[in-house]
Amino acid sequence: MSRDTPIHSWPGSYYINSEKRWVSGTLSLSRTTLRFTTEQSKDSLASVRLSRIMEIKMESSSFIFSTLTVLEEGNIKHWFGSLRPNRVVVYNVLEHFWRERLLSPTQSCGANAPPSKGRELISLVSGAQRRLEDTGKVLNHQGEQFDNVMQDLDKIDSNLGVADKLLSELESPPWWPFGKLPWKSQQEAKSEQAAMAASAKGSGKGPRVITSIPAVVSKGGESDWKPGCLVMLVSSLEIRDANSLLLHHFERDEVDDIRVHNPYEISVRQRFIGKPDISYRLLSVKMTEALSVLEMQYKKKLEFTPDFTDFRASPATTPGATQGEDSVWSAGAAAGLVQHRQETEVPVEIPAGELTQVQVQVLQPMVTDAEAQELKQMLLQLKNLALEAETELERQDEALDTLVSSTDRTTMTIHKHSRRMRKLL
Image 1 (cartoon, rainbow, N blue to C red):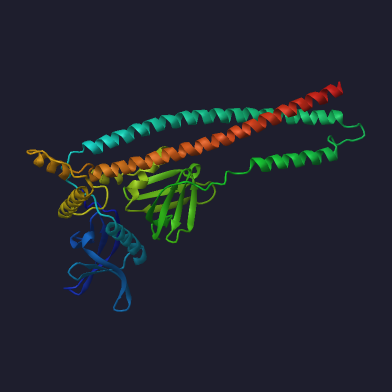
Image 2 (cartoon, helix red, strand yellow; image 1 turned 60 degrees about the vertical axis):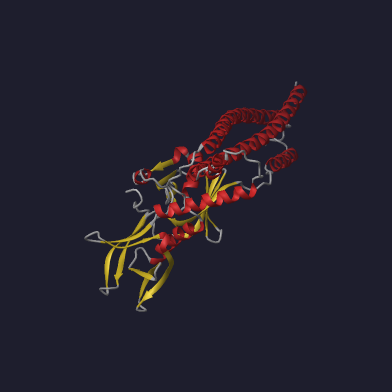
């Protein structure tokens, strides 16, 4: 179950051209292959590699039945009909995986080059990540202290409000039975509104985007898959459609759980009491990039389903090519690397007897594709940590400004109450 583990499956029928009949079964999509198996005998009637697909279309059979056709190399056409929930949903998912696979070259398997430089870079990034995590913990603790001080100041303001009410009752003339005098109440209300307006002014900066990946989105169940994207911000998640219009915005504290069904499919849910939950299911070729960020932001809310273990045991983590295709990609990457170095390196004088060693060093890649992917994920995590630290610092700066203004206002209020009490005495 290494490469043939299905990412998604749909019940439907397949047209056998030689026998001129339709056979019911299941259409399944795996990392590398689109396969149709019969319902009873589980025989494979059609198996098409994603790399050999030339076109995916929605057509009609005999001008009546709605079908989905897949054109394979060699002008071989496969007809799929009676797809449930409907052919549009199946088309959106297949077209997403096929298009994303065409746009980005796959990872090569069998890298024999020494990974010393790559491992060294990974070690440096890992050290920076650990130090940034320690800094984040210190900032978190400092932010908690600021929050405690703000709570104490709120208590002081509440007590001062009670003292102001009592002093107003003592200062009011005996013929006025309503506590504060009306003109004083209006003045205090205006000053409070001005203070609230000043404190409500934001920084004016937009939300910070960590990463965005194309995806196929379904709200609630799996009945309606549509193209869209998942946008991960520092403090929230956004789900958008193909035109970048916002479908839903999840604040971090609003997300109750994120279920990981496989390396390409997740579901995000927000629970409610007394009304239906809000749930979105997302399917994407690049979901592994998003998972590295989600594991940091929503570590306690991330839940891996039993189906995820089937993919954990498989060697590939992205929809890759076959072994022959991998070797082609490896050879092409090596040739491009050699050509790039020959064009960019400064020619040096090579002593006799050392030409073979230099040629071997040029042919060896400095960083393998697997290490580059690992570095990419680690750098995404570093970006996430840095943005969170920046956001926390800005929040603490605003808290400090609020603390200074609140302290000054409290000090002035205490002095004013002291003068009023002296007058009463």
